[in-house]
Image (cartoon, rainbow, N blue to C red):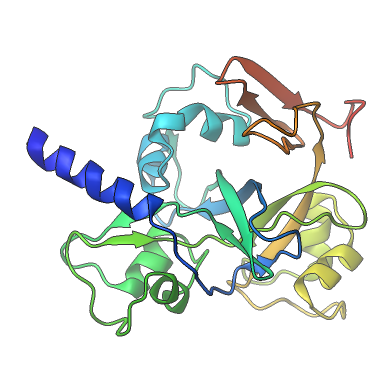
Length: 262
């Protein structure tokens, strides 16, 4: 058992460290090539689950505090906390920009189980945040119908590091529920319809949005004084959340009363 876990760890490490050039839809990211930042994605589980199950799925079990911070949960929240079906959990991850597109930086990594197929992985396991074509593209899968048990798949969550309207923001991938308009989404997240329309190249015509469309929502954030030499730079914290920096020694919290609110 220990040998199998060790072999899996080595394979996973090689997967993450191997440089690749990818093409995925993602979000627009016109920031300088190789730029990285922190982004969020809204995961809606189809069934009741726990925070730990979600953390495992998105590769956050070893960084559980980041999941708590993104959802403004107390640090003493137990991993087995129940998450109701259809409840939204915000997933924090590192975004990387390449060739004008932003996707998650070689994470999360999913290990294929018996009976899995790409549509099930994209739709049921990762909440429609990505498509089967996008998974196939970044993993160089020529036939999406053929995947192997124990195969490691990089799940390319959409993201961006761009400023919006001159402000630094945290980009949030939001899967649109049925019967929602651009105005309704803008009101929900405290942004303007103009920003959403321009960012997602959508007409602001008052019509209902396509259900299951993944929108790039620019969440207002607090900036920090983290050095540009720090691996956490640029450290942005979305409103109503917190993050840790300096090797988890410093907790940074953001609310709209902060002086460094953007």
